Length: 112
Length: 114
Image (tube, rainbow over all chains, first blue to last red):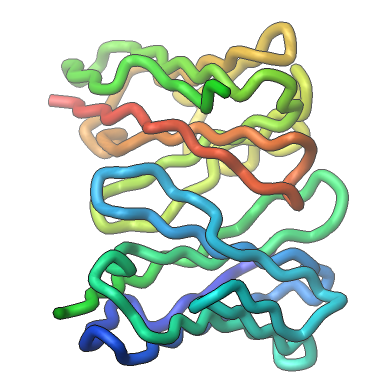
């Protein structure tokens, strides 16, 4: 089955800095890669996703890049703000009825 | 519109008792997922429903765990003879169809086994 590795497990940055979270996956058939944000005590929510037919996708301060050859994808957050502080999960999925496999999460702390 | 709801929000039980956790997905969502999240851990997949059938139940940790879905809507996760290691937050999610659509999560049920 699919295996998703996520790094780092914790990341501390100063407000205004950029943050990068990296994930690798094992199943070359995976073609859908979402990122979820979970604030403390709240439910996970989708923030951005990318499919294998594109290499990069951007939405305001967040962007995701995908390298299918190397089987890794990354989340980039620019101009970080304290409200970006949360746990971020990457995930990977194949086609059809396959399920999402999540990474173990990255706790991002943005200090004012 | 209404999101995914789960009940109860908190459940405290004694070791050896059975518990039932309920999930009400977003109306019209055919796919439903159960996950387990232990303190500081990631999202551990348990089982996936498409309609009333479960194409993937590979994540259920033991035969004490079972789940069903009726009418293509409400799902119940049952844990028999609970153990202390079952203590966790159990999250349910639904999506419009399959895993390549956004999953909407419920608030979770926090289970504590004493």
